[in-house]
Image (tube, rainbow, N blue to C red; front, side, top):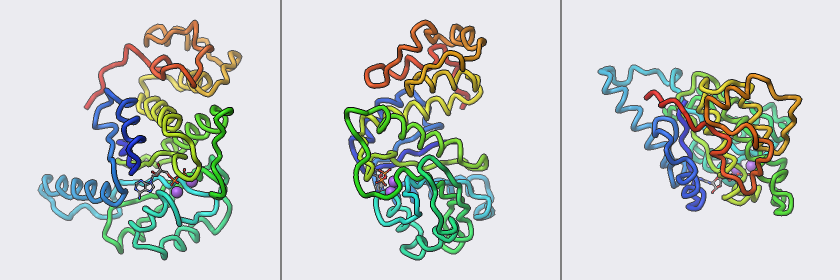
Length: 273
Ligand code: ADP
Ligand code: NA
Ligand code: NA
């Protein structure tokens, strides 16, 4: 799966660019601007590709494979932030009602994720989106949730969790996932905090099978500040050695000051394009 990071916020995009340096554009791309523009580009790219294949228009909308992350609230209202961009993209207010029906108008806790199949809606609009990956980042946007004195629990952790939920909760038939800065709007997490967590989640996710699930778990515990060794699989030590990760000081990792590359493989196999 390829990820398109899309945000109107210039600082967010600049930090993504810095932190994701070296990633292949086939795995992650950054779009500084409005969601609707990013979608136009994506869709025209897809049309060209279909035409290149010599079969223009044969790709049924039902087989399309774009998904958009909604950094929503727990009730499915789409009246602000990136969600408003999603609502506009789907033609306005009626989409909000449709989505809320699809969620049975019920409460979805922060941290949960639901991939809503929007094919029936997309078909009428002739766009190519298959899912909205609904990932609430706040119960309701009453106030900012970030506290500088508790940056890990109120910033790094919720952003990592929302990003990881969105990435892992996206169905396997998705080719391109469009995602904004998570918690950088109404939730009020500073761009520097959010982008670091997003970059770590994304890099870890894109390693796929190059790193074992058990080692990913160890690295996540360290990133989030829960280095609980009884949960660490023995085999991970050897794997770290092979990958060029320093096992000895993993537990001392401090997300507030340390570089995320300390938790990522140095001897990474070349990405296959
Ligand atoms: P959260 O509630 O998680 O903070 P928001 O939707 O308020 O989510 O903001 C998430 C990010 O979306 C912010 O960084 C903001 O700059 C960006 N954003 C808001 N509207 C748009 C849009 N129409 N196109 C692209 N990015 C947007
Ligand atoms: Na939100
Ligand atoms: Na939003």
